[in-house]
Image (tube, rainbow, N blue to C red; front, side, top):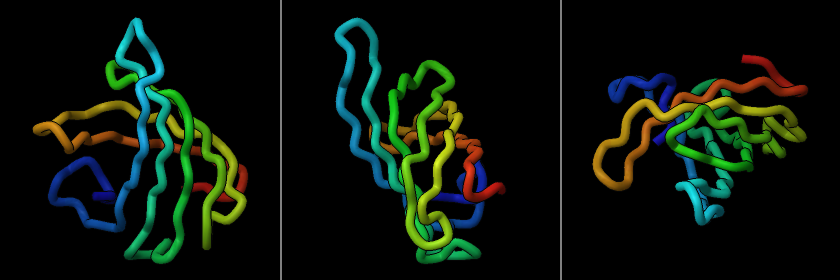
Length: 104
């Protein structure tokens, strides 16, 4: 689920799709490819693609490598951190980003 904020009751604006592969033998680090697909609000029908190394115990910086719709040709970076993990499949991240094409 992709929400406007970290609160579980914040507005649902899309979905986050991720492919992660373990990338380190020494620490729990992953190579992560994210798509944020927007299904509501100002960015409905658009998506943004994020790629890079993820270590859930650290602040993570990953690159924005493109997008569709309002995010077409987006370039920049994200900074995210784990807020909480609930169960085995839901991870709550706060993602801040800056890009050459758009600003929030």
